[in-house]
Image (cartoon, rainbow, N blue to C red; front, top):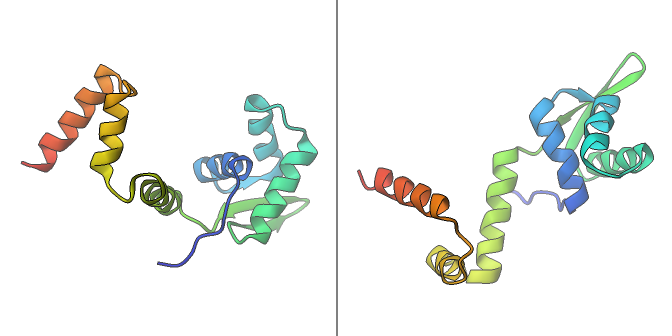
Length: 124
């Protein structure tokens, strides 16, 4: 497994847009993020440039616009971050994590039902 680029929380918000809508141009990314954040267009452009520099995004110039596509897969990135979180905080033990969430009432009844459903499907 190759090391994925380190992506900040703000950069991750940009990546979520690109993953969902790629290929997507700068103006479209900016439009979508202006709807959900208080960032300026200049801040968004800076985040996009950082992601290109880090190797998370690539682009093609099409006329007068830049069109971006991800070089990092969403599932791959989320899986690596999930494993890293689990290892860092729960020594890799998912049972310990779930126990902590259950003991602190962090899971709703609906989430518990969903987990039970997932576990019962896996054992079939």
